[in-house]
Image (tube, rainbow, N blue to C red; front, side, top):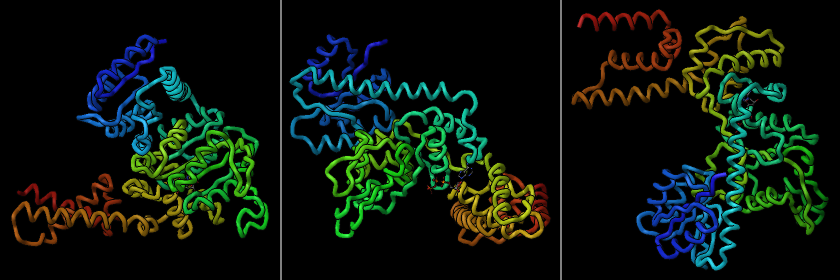
Length: 472
Ligand SMILES: Nc1ncnc2c1ncn2[C@@H]1O[C@H](COP(=O)(O)OP(=O)(O)OP(=O)(O)O)[C@@H](O)[C@H]1O
């Protein structure tokens, strides 16, 4: 095994050299830098395993350094070395992404070694998981049935599912991020199914819960804990015994509740409201959010220690606009589901519908597509879905976006030409046709639908323009 590589950043040369000497004697490889900027350069070049940093230095201070390094290499442990009594500063550094801290001067060198070994163990665990990820991401899914509700052919999605399959058997927490409607809850349930835990899968939405409501919902209360607590209440955590608890919208977790969740993750213990004796739980915690937790850590609204605890097994589901290849599969699946629910024969759809859907960004992701298809299936009467049913939901969005872009383009045309005049109707039409053809990936049928004219009419307009440009 190669020796552990450490980077020490401090502008006090004597201090830096004295611990570097001690650590080299103890068998570590030690790199030194006198400010954050030099530290980042050394990091990029030598990739140390653990980084120690002072907070106050010239050129680039420790706070700026921590924020930058935690952003580019979140798995690297950063340990702050700070003077005694600087609690506020250390707290700020931990929020930015530091993992631990040491007080200066370091009187007991054994403390230093302990901190290094702890950080190294955690780091090795993360690296081990990464290599496990690579090993397990080849081959087919072994638990096809657990993932059967997730319709996808996308390679990134399949890789995510393989990763979840690999880590489902552990009892570590799982963090699932992604935009709304991408399927976070669906994947959380799949993790529970693969884990083969005997208990239930219990889902809780955290958003809008203050600390008392969060504690009451999750942990429960004893009779008389507060004025309206007339009966004992077992919380949802007890219902998830032997199973999994899914905490949705974890980014909305109240500050005080964050401390309670961290304790739960670390000690597997919790207190019911009004109780003095802690209860134990073996429920697996799966959390999800559509918010950027890393950014929340930087702005101090989400605890860094909780983030890192949740981060060990983390996946981000790509939005539907980045996996448009899944649209045909999802469309077929939802048409059949809707027809089944509505007691109708599954309708077919015109081939242009696919290009039409592919021109749209789906801010509500799979959930939005599903709702559109259910609506279109409910409305159809002749065995074929009408593009117009989708136009109601999408057309407005696309044409509004197009109109705004066009107005901007027309204004630019005026400014560039230094001409104080409105664009002519013909000029504006040319811009609109170009936009619609772009959005429709060159498909005239779809572009015509977007513009609200027949395919024939659009074709004539395009040919007229082509003929004009040849004449010029
Ligand atoms: N790949 C998929 N295949 C089939 N159905 C899907 C897929 N992804 C999502 N869905 C469906 O879309 C809907 C939204 O999924 P889900 O509730 O899991 O999303 P979410 O990311 O948890 O959303 P939110 O952040 O709003 O809570 C559900 O009805 C789900 O069944």
